[in-house]
Length: 216
Image (cartoon, rainbow, N blue to C red):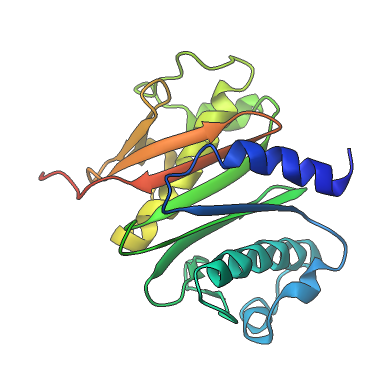
């Protein structure tokens, strides 16, 4: 499958995930994508290895394109102290990549308080990682058992990305409960997230903040 065909196939599935206020994009990571970083973006990643800079270039170029559709042109996407992307005023978003594909999601804060996205290959999750990510209260029902643990792992990554800008807390897998059957997640703080996902041609999960934290 050509690069453009692979991107088209995944984007067709991704576009079924998002509420109308969220824009999504994907791009196969190519040699030279590190050159897509704007100077101020590259300055925030000076010590990172080439592969990381290349994937960051692909993801940030994607996100800038999505922002441009919203009228925000030439917006650099910096990097915060915890590694989180820094978005222009009035916008929220998320970036992710695996070894081959970068994805991005953006929305206006007036419509979506926060969101997170993650991408993974459609392959079983190694047992040692599944043992860390899957907690007794997680619900995997109704998902292809070969991919359920990988999907849950990806969901927790997306939820963390969505909650960090709101709560500025480092969460472990044990701090996020996921119910794949109900397509929802909740953090230990009580932050509720709505999940949408696809399994093929790659696993992509979108987490959208649904409400304010429940009272303790």
